[in-house]
Length: 413
Ligand SMILES: Nc1ncnc2c1ncn2[C@@H]1O[C@H](COP(=O)(O)OP(=O)(O)OP(=O)(O)O)[C@@H](O)[C@H]1O
Ligand SMILES: [Mg+2]
Image 1: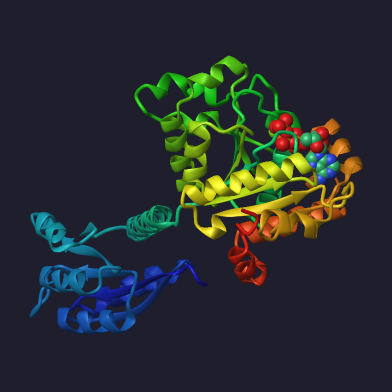
Image 2: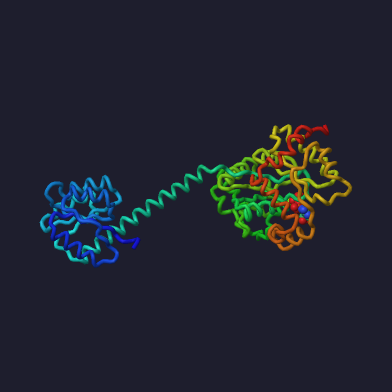
């Protein structure tokens, strides 16, 4: 039986050893693994047999029970000693305990007393070990958490509105969480007119970033966990304020702080953004590891992207920090992708096809199309984007086109 308590007897009187052996022989959950006639022999046998419990006589010629217990406690901390003494020797209780014994039995004791003490000591030791294991595991988890790499902040940006930022941000977040198992927080950074809640069918009465405003003056983010909303897809969402005028109250410094805190516990922090440029935009873009810049095949859009790439260059962003996502890639009205690329001087990094049916159907149901229309091309495009953004597909694949793109990036100037 796996869980039998293994007991070693140490007593110099042969009759006592026999008697104890017989008594314990009746118990299914206890096994006498050896019997020693002296402290020295007991110590040797314990080191070999590694018992759970040693039933130790206190008075023995040579090394007595207390000296043997001291040695045992030092060398076999997993073994518990139950000391046995005769009436009148109970003064030894204190020194036995100091030597490391876990229990003290005064002879003569009943078979019940003996068996109960063995079980209790064994159980106590097991509980203690379980607590130690739990503590060690907890510590290991804590260490792992504190040593984990901070997550990536990915901002879905475009210098022009209505190009599909929110659509891409939401579905990208859901794809990374539901299929790649990433811990994802989606931040509705479009503070004035945020749509993330609509696409995810979240109640507008939910908590939002506005609930953090009271903490903002002190620069605290203590209530952050309480304002994050868990969506059924597995992502967490930080909603935009319920009314547009509150947007002005959220400072740039605070947004930065929020993002830094969020990335500590997430693999991916995806931020849906707003289309115009001001200080807060720059701050958000600065803090981002990756700026997915969305464009569509419209001439005004392309002009704005060129300007934005120029700004990004002036801001000193690394080449791979800005990646271009061509949304509604097949809805060209006379403009070819190659024309766009040569106009803006760099390659398109990702494409997402146009699929009005799936996108609008999903929008009306408040379910991201990645979940409701998983088989469609538009969902597959999002999946590919998610893999690349999370590093599941080495950027080497994308990089095949990038060196050339980098060289010619500002060729249009
Ligand atoms: N790949 C696509 N195929 C078809 N329709 C799309 C696609 N992407 C976005 N749309 C549609 O385009 C419209 C604008 O999309 P979305 O709201 O995501 O853009 P946005 O850039 O966030 O806009 P805003 O400036 O209002 O924040 C929506 O009606 C959306 O359903
Ligand atoms: Mg939007």
